Amino acid sequence: MLTKQETMAKFASSTVGTNGLLSADQANTFINEFVQQAELINMVQVKPVTNQAGYVYYVDMSSPATVAAAEATEYTDETGTPEFSRAAYQTVKRRTQFELTWEDIHDTIEGEQFGSTIVKMWNQRWGLDTEYLALLGDEATSPVATAWDKLYDINDGWLTQLTAENGVNILDVAKLEDAFPTFQMFAAALRLLPTKYRKFTKFPNLWMTSPTVVDDYRNWLASRSGNLGDAIVQGLATLTPQGIGFATSNGVPGLAVFPDDLGVSEDKRVVVLGSPKNFIWIPRRNFELLSRFIQEKDSWRYTGYSEDDFVVVNYDGFVRVINVEANPEFEEEE
Image (cartoon, rainbow, N blue to C red; front, side):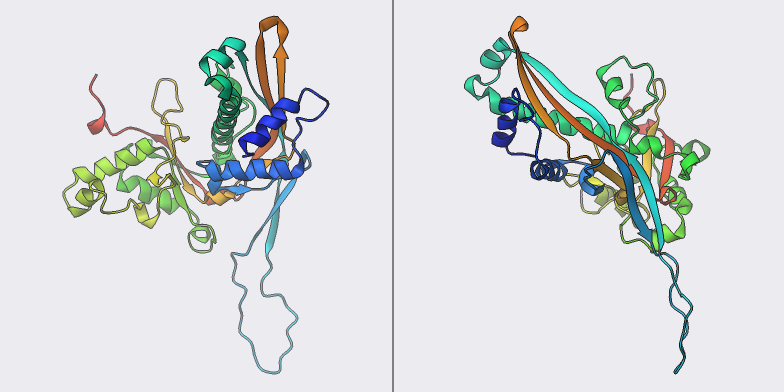
C-alpha cells in the first residue's frame, strides 16, 4: 500500500477540505502494494477503474482456427472468430473505521510511535476485510448482527456467485462413498470440468480450499499403504490431486481465507476447482483517508472510504465441491 509516511500524511491532513483523497497515482500504489501482500487477491485479475459502473471485457479462442489450404487459391471465409464477452460491474462504497482514546494512543500504543502503528493497523485490517469480503461476501446475510455479518452483507463475493444457477458445475460429495477428501472426490470433480478448460486455457487450474481440507487429504493418503503417503507426510512429494496443484499461501497448500465451516450446525467446507484468473477484483480509484479528534470523548477517529466490486467470468470453468466433511478418523474425540 502507500508508505507509512504517505498514509500518515493523508490521515493528518484530512481535516481540511479533500486532502484525505488519494490521487490516481497514490490509489494505484495503494492497490498494487495490497495485491502483493494479499493471499487470494494476488492470484486473481485486478482491474482498477475510474467509473462507478461499467463492463470488463474478455475474449475466448477455444475453437480451432486451422483448415486445409491449397496453392493459388484465394480464401474469403473466416476459419476462426474470437468470442468476445463482457461482465458488468457496480462498485460498492464501504467504510473502514476505528476509534482510539488519548490513553489508548499514548499509554498503550508504543508512545510517540502511535501514528506509525495506527496506520499499520488500519492497512492490515482493510486488507483482511477486503479478502474476506471478496470471497465470502453475501448480500443475503441474515441476521446482520455481528461485525462479520456487517462485513459480508456489503456485497456478493466470488464464492456466493459460484452457483448452479450461474452455470457452475456442482459436485455434492454427500453422494459419493466418502464425504471427506479422498482421491475419488478430486477425480469426480475433475470429470465435471469441461474439456476446453482443461486443455485450452492460458491460466492454470488450481484446487482452492482451506488448509484443513488439504490436511485431511494428506492424512488420508498417509493412512493408506504405499510409498506416496509416507513421502507426502515427510514433505518429499507435492500434493497434486489429478495432476493439479493447490492454491498456496506463503508456499503452504491451502488458503486461510477459505472457510472450514459455512454452516451453523453442520460442516460445509468447500473446495473449488478452476483458475483464480476468472475471479476479477475491481477497485475504484477513489480512496479517502480521514482522521478527526472528538473533543467530547477525548479520542481520535480514523476512517477510510473505498469502493470495489467482485466479478466472476467463465462460470462454467469452475467446479464447486460442496458438503465436504472432516475425516472422522482424524477428528478429536470429545
